[in-house]
Image 1 (tube, rainbow, N blue to C red):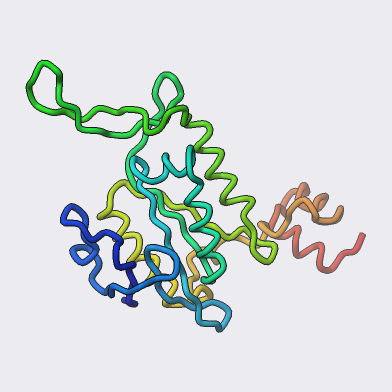
Image 2: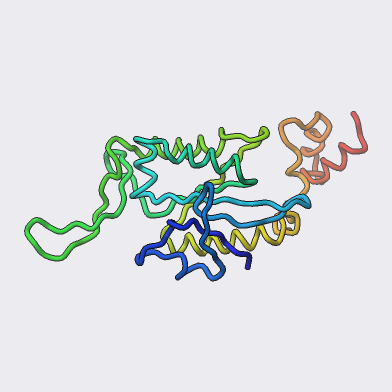
Length: 220
C-alpha cells in the first residue's frame, strides 16, 4: 500500500481522525489538496491530489457563497497530475427541491434528539448542485482534457476506504489494469465511423465486432 500524505489540519479531530482509518499515511504540509499519493501512467511517475468536501459543512457553503472549492481545485490542477473531488456525506432532495442533509435536532418540548434532514444552504437546490458538479467534470480542462474526477462517499470511514483503494490502483500503474479490456472491439464504432462498417453491422451474421474488421479490408 503506498503512503498517503495527509494535510496537517485535515481530519485531525477525535470524531474523524485520519490515523484511525488510514494504515499507511504521513502528516505533512501540502501546498494544495487534503490528500496526495503517487501513481504511474504511460511510464511516468505521477502525483494525485484529493480535495475532500463535506456536504453539510463545506460544499454547500462553497457553492452558494465563496467558490472556495474552485480556487482549491485550480491550485491542485497547477501542482498535480490528477485531481479528485470527494463529496462526503448523505444528502437528499426535499419537496421544495432544496438539498438537505442530516442534522441532530432536539425537540422544543424536550425529549431525545433525533436526526432530521434540513436544507444545507439557503436557496441551494438539488438541481443547481447536480448541474454544478456535472459542469466541474465536463468543463474544467487541462491540455484539452477534462481533469476533475468527482467521487461520492457516505462517511469519513468510506472516504478512507476509497483513498486506500484509489492509491493502490494508481500505484500499480494505469496500463496494468485490464478489467475493462473485456469490452468488445465494436466500442470503437462511433459516430465518426464510415459508411462501410455502418452498413456491414446490419447484415446478418456480422454485427458490430465483425463490422469493424470488415471496414479494415473493404473500402466500399
